[in-house]
Length: 142
Image 1 (cartoon, helix red, strand yellow):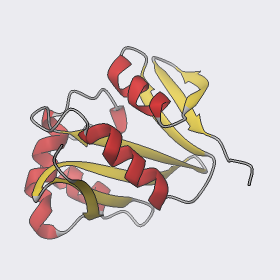
Image 2 (tube, one colour):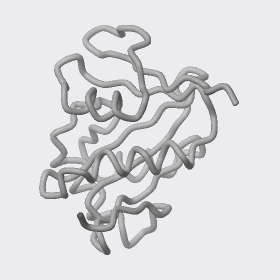
Image 3 (cartoon, helix red, strand yellow):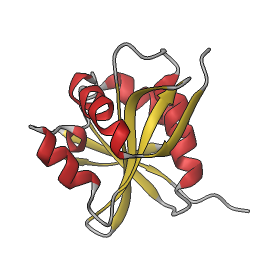
């Protein structure tokens, strides 16, 4: 397996991250951008912590956390050309960087692959929001 890692999204990553977000098979609606200016504006919001997903040294996607209606939510968009394990590893890394719990994710009810990736990391179904399912990574007891 190639080395999957995250780093804070930098200007040199933006073209590849935007392309990966547009090509992603993920139905995560918050990772859908109509154009590059909208993508750039979203990544520059103060509540968004955007990270480039790197496979070895190539940008293959974007992982982010943001505030949504008072809750911390994560999202991910990975190029279909990335290693099959890249989404799971990128999400694992993102959840370790985001200390706030509970941590949420919203996916289309028809997006079984994303649902499966989140479930492998401990996310459970919290509620339905129209055609989407909101999942939560609950706090752990220490």
